[in-house]
View 1 (tube, helix red, strand yellow):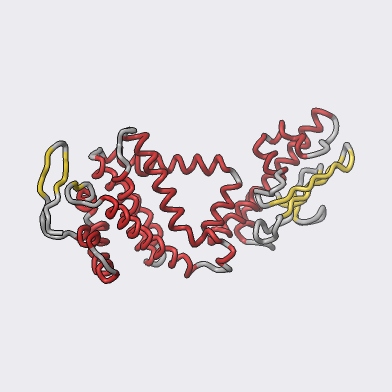
View 2 (tube, rainbow, N blue to C red):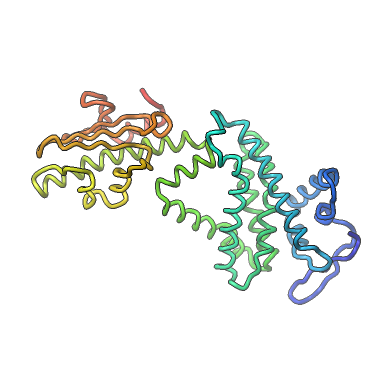
Length: 337
């Protein structure tokens, strides 16, 4: 522990301070008491002295790399599960219905690591080693401690975590802050956004499986999408009749008018968007469409009805009409009338 550690910087070697640092104490701890004693000072250093800390992570010399990696993972899961504890205290309902919930820290860690390391290869070069990035992702987890602060905690944790990622990558790879932000923040965000857009409605199920507390927001999104889909189907059916002289026999025939993505959603047998769409052509001049949640209150809260008039109503042909998207936004935010 007292042996000097040497940091390689642009081909030069400099002796580091031989006194034990919070990181060396943490890595050399051999029992629970040692970890407990080392954790506060190590966390403080990462949060408020990130440049010095991440420089120390690049030290070479008498370091067991396997030990350093394992201690980093241990550190990440400590704060990951502390955050899970906070989330659990605010979560209503039966958590046992969401088995992935308890794996959330592990999945979040793996996803973050995969996105950041991929971005580093793309932005900084395919020759870059990924061990430094692994350690940066591990120790930026300390930002989760801010979740214990009411109201502003999540925002503070997010901003601080992003800042730690950017500083960590900059110091670990001796790059500029611009490239660091691009590799550690912007590119991972773009890749994550692309992944979720590619998954489409299936992404909703993944989010709910990991974040049950997001269920209400997903339900609201499903409700709004269902209204928009019903309106689009009514408009598409009218255009179909104008071209061919009669209404379509099934929703699949409207692909040209709705687009492939919408058609797939409204005809999906797995009801990925949370709603079931029941279309009936009564005659060449008349059709009805009913959209209802495949699981009431869980996947949606409304029943929508429309026909050849194009008016979208709640529940039945005589139900309350939804005259505009503003009316629908009021229903979504206010709940069932």
